[in-house]
Image 1: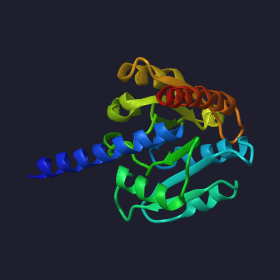
Image 2: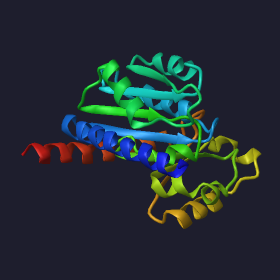
Image 3: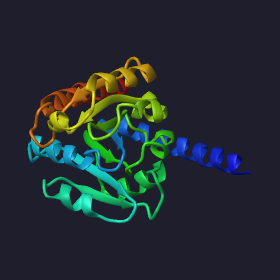
Image 4: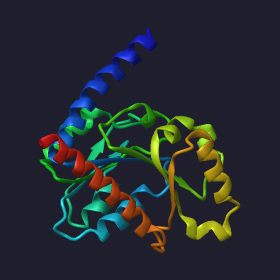
Length: 225
């Protein structure tokens, strides 16, 4: 019975996600979905990211949390539309939540929509939010074996960002082994190592985003013609 209910929920989510994906395509919105364990640095990365955009950029953020609006308040300081999605205990965001809050926020493209998912490497991997790419963050304060323990999210992610690299001299963590394990799960996954504290690698992240945004813009232009 539980399996039947789960399949029904995922089927409904996929239907809504398909509608979101079409909306993003029609409006030229690049949507990226950031997923990680709690404390891996999603919000810190978004702070650096928002700070790098000109103030008149069409950029918006939906950030998910179980209870608080702390992340939204941190990100709102950069002057872009930010909306907190408080899940009340649900361990992931779903397409229904994104659709409702996106409508209430009134964000339209062309532009970039960042979704900061609930801190969890399991549940978010199964829920399509219509995004162009899932991005998984792995901190050097975690284990190199995370890709092997949680293969679903690494398999579905276009990019793995290794975060908090400024701490590498102080922790027992092999970046090479973490990358090797990620590519055992997803041989084609892109990787970037960065530190939100020092800013090292943030330029590579912004370049990666820019390339993906150009692809979205070309797809939108092709659909119009």
